[in-house]
Length: 288
Image (tube, rainbow, N blue to C red; front, side):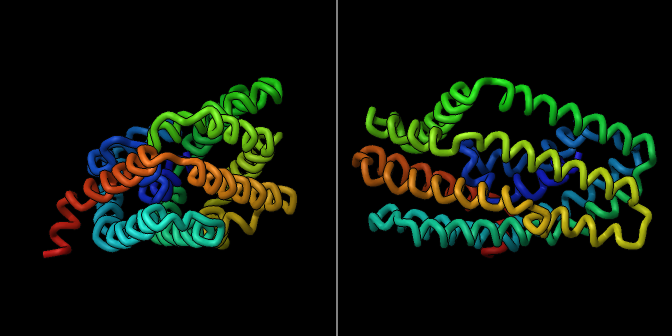
């Protein structure tokens, strides 16, 4: 369930911007419907909890739209300027990534008190059901991402990346597809590191929730939501850093090989996201 609580972090962040959605504004306007619906996959809330959650969600959405989205528009401007100026390099990408992480952390800090309040109000049966649902979700991911052979994992990872890139840049050339394959090979058993870290996080989260009436519970949830990197093992920290570096290298190489048509589509997609957000009523009200 907390990964659906974390949906408030993920879906109200730059992850939404980069999700490849054709109508980001439409998706954003429906988050108050989408989030409670997906939350039900992990937690069966009673009537009082549902009412509280829906009211709290609306407050968070209003805060996010009026105080955070204007900064996202600036971020999109900087991203597009990188493309227009042909300055897609490692330093610039690291800066954009740091800015995105900062935006996500800001959302995490904002919603953590609400997450704590919701979790403290759960009964034992709800905690058990949440634990069962998280376990089921983890097993599903292990089946999908770890059961296939390493060669199959590499192939499927490349296919997923090709699909994402096609949505933003259009069809890739053979050379670009080969670069994507090389990127996927370089990550090796990254699926194992990712799923392993997810399993550790879920175990720590459930352990904390089982002790939700303890004095240090708020601090534990704060660490799990806002300072989650502090819980990483040294091995996963190194793997994550390599994954980020390989991703930046991939983007740099693909942009270096990109055609005029691909760069045009990319800027059009960025502009489309910008337009979707600018059309939101809450942003218009702020501007007025």
